[in-house]
Length: 249
Image (cartoon, rainbow, N blue to C red; front, side, top):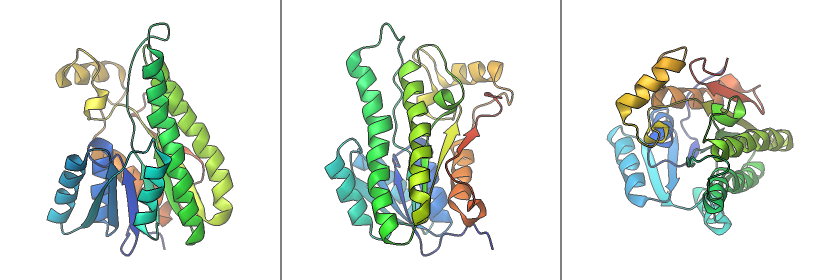
């Protein structure tokens, strides 16, 4: 019987210190999972852990940089048996194709693509050894479905995430490891606010162009992640699940 219950399971969430990653971590903890929180900023991870423990959940904060394989390997080895992984670490840097600095472009790919690849590499390794699991990569509707001016580096990185997800999914499913990608549109986090905007301006911009007239909440993305990792989605493999209020239709 399909269930959204994760008691007795361990979930690793990268980028868990804020935004989408934090909400996903809290959602899994509220569903009974032991949650391992990973990210570069220990103070933010500890705040996520505090919020989870306030709700009687179990959480452990581990500082890690997904762009360094030694750091990622050590992180995953600390977790022990791993049942769910959500790779939410990511950055947004904007700039026109003919104006963006090479260093900025490379940094976007280091975090969004190489960091995600390294995370999957070690998560798959552990899951194959312990009987399978579910991996969810956080992509974007930008790159997976649409593009925007000045968002070339980000769009290219998230298109790579979608492609890498599909390849890894085909390789891993024979071992019981199910991999998919969540592709949100604008979500109520600081990453959705463009340079020169405040939150009100962001909301007005989205309302003018999005069929649903609003940004998503982080809890809406977390609910989708919970379902996608659950037995309710057991036949979904290698897919982009777009959560954007109809923006890319």
